[in-house]
Length: 184
Image (tube, rainbow, N blue to C red; front, top):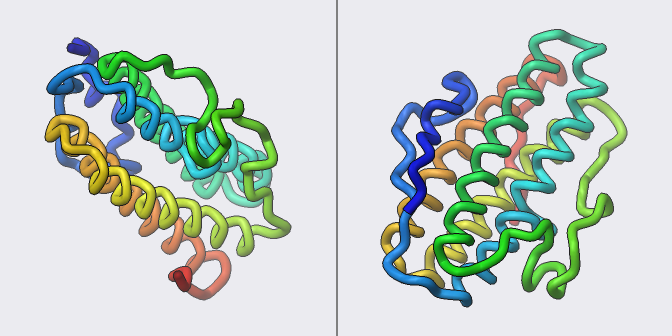
């Protein structure tokens, strides 16, 4: 059982206000740990989001201080999610190496997973797309994982991802005059 207080690392404006659940599992389960590697460091993952948002931050901070801070702080929130997933993977008996499972065929993460974008508006839309894809992946894993403690953490992470979608859409409206909802 993890004794880390994840709420202490929460960036309030960039996360849902509800508390994070305790990190624990019913019992070790290597299949669940393997599934979670995709959320941790797969193609659509916290590690990909962290790096994509930091890359976008490097451009956005030159355009607008608040916009740069948005991407930096959302990235930090994604780091917290990655830390929680690492703790769960370890509790399940797995090893949180920086790789995915199915999405990467067990290979290590690489920079080609990032959607780099070409402009401010394009990058914000890519960030919104990434959040929607992450939610879809978490929901898929919630259906496959029957451990209520793991599911509770994934459901809580989804709440933060929804906040990120709203924040990115607010920025898109402010800087590009539009909002965006990807078509599935």
